[in-house]
Image: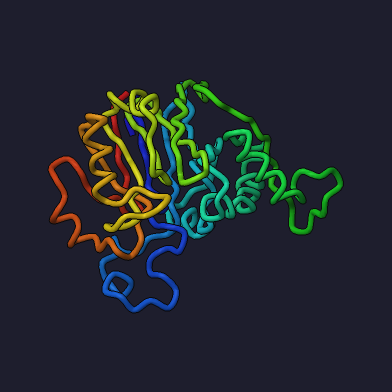
Length: 264
């Protein structure tokens, strides 16, 4: 990658069930198109901080181990958490493998409520004298509520609503990323405007009580004025080749393993 560019690698583009879904025989779940095989949503951002290549993970999905092996990942410099739902958090224990390699703690960032849930749910990591077994992830938790800097990159926090849950998206330079969302406040919309690439979640075609549907996600992309929009966090209702043929110019479906790059 170019020294002054930012990459986003889609580790996963699926909903909490993944695609194919257990026990389902629908056309998408039986598809031979690899783009219809969706692990739980997560992305990896890459950029250069001086001579160092930084790799920052968004969420530790339930499928993190598989995703890391598939993409050949051997370093995670930090984690940005969107919220504490299981499909976005429950791969957290896999971070210990990166600790083994890196010999350093991994800083993790998120809202106060997200980090409180992580601390409670994974108390064995954070309670002094906790059971080690095969080793514990070595993490430092950093609560954030507003923009901050990480390895020379400004990280903009993008608060949105996911039903009753407050969720964070993040903007890094020209790329904005929001997954679970059914309401985007005007302040967040202003922060996303000007991004060249906007990634947003859309679970399905029909309406959903806590997620954008496809039409709502397309409308959100239009409102931001982003040059390129990508849909993620999709369930088996959205078959890749069929939906792609219907999308407006500048909008595409993401898929696992997709790598995009924007200049800084």
